[in-house]
Length: 422
Image 1 (cartoon, rainbow, N blue to C red):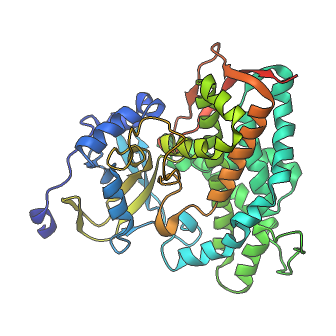
Image 2 (image 1 turned 180 degrees about the horizontal axis):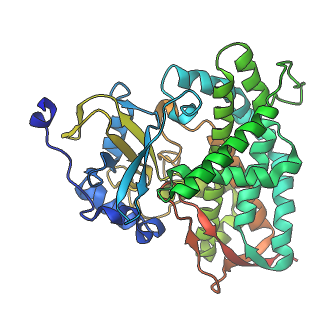
Image 3 (image 1 turned 90 degrees about the horizontal axis):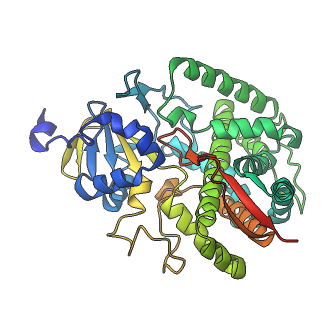
């Protein structure tokens, strides 16, 4: 009560909470995100206890207050049967709170275990293999004169993360399915039947990964072969830095973080180029500008539109009262277009002074450990596609749609027509 007397509750926005899970918002969230950022940088979603944070400054403040806000995923926003947002509570356990959803000191233990394999120099050594996989998958589209780009955007990241984990390459189709499953729990559109199916799929994935967790910690690495992530996790179990449940939880998160997010980035990048042939020609002539383009794609269309934080104790944020158990959605997609931070934030500009200054990989201690990998994969795919075509366009015979998810900004289909270099 004392907290409420000192500070008011945040305003409810939108007034009709169903709009936050509507198809219009999922397909084009930016108008509503702009209104939130300009008028309601802290806003409540109905009576769910979920708060939307939309300005750069307020999100930076929230990220810096770990004593008030936990990274633990304690619940998610869902669409009820009548379309009204509600929340679904999740259990907090060692196996579910790993990497991105872990607090210190567990987060540091998890991150340090996998970080060595994901350093920029380690990732750079994979470029020839990644390029070969991209060329192999791109060949089908080139020979056919086009098609749906999404299978390539999903298969290549799944192949890469499977390789890093040390899993059999012949299981890539299963890996692709699991990688795309990662953000479904956060999508906001799960009914009870799908939730049960998702639980069963996750269990099957956990069993599979357990079978591939090395029983011995003897590294297979040599001077030219780095240890796999599964070997590093097995070493963590042996040293008691983590337990087996945490090891499998980390591996599961790596699938989603390394698969679905990169797939989303690739789809957004190709769509933007298909809609802007002059920009595509510019990058085709000056491929050294591709990295700057990738950063602008990340800024304008972050693969993950937000991440959650849970409120540890009664406090205030932005002049509004929060209660223990409330939840925050850190809207990266809104902060990345904040005019207080960017000149002409709605415009794609290849010459920004600090191109990596965005929130699409998070910020601070929880900055994405796989950022180097995502950037490398995107660069290689764009170099190969631009270098092997004279042009490509959206296929107007099919509608381009994003996945039905409040969380991930991923295209469900991306039909393109392309003109291969002969």
